[in-house]
Image (cartoon, rainbow, N blue to C red):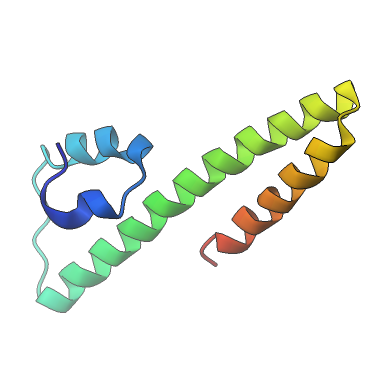
Amino acid sequence: MIVGSLNNYLPEELHFIYNKSILFPLPTFSSPQKYLHEIEKVAWELRDLSLREKIRMLSEQISKYEKEGKSEEIESLRSEYAHLLSLLHK
């Protein structure tokens, strides 16, 4: 089970990774601000990893549908693909 309210923000597929990560000791930071900065950085990295996995899966599905000639489904998937790309942290 996810600790605290972070459960509300992480996608289901990241729960196992997060739960495993809390078993390791956290590094010591010189100030609370640096600690918060590191939390934000890792949260963005986890979010991007999740988005990239979804993008990869969509890409595979688009390729499959292209081979099958399913043009209506392809258009919908491409739209979702573009949306997910726009959400990646830059």
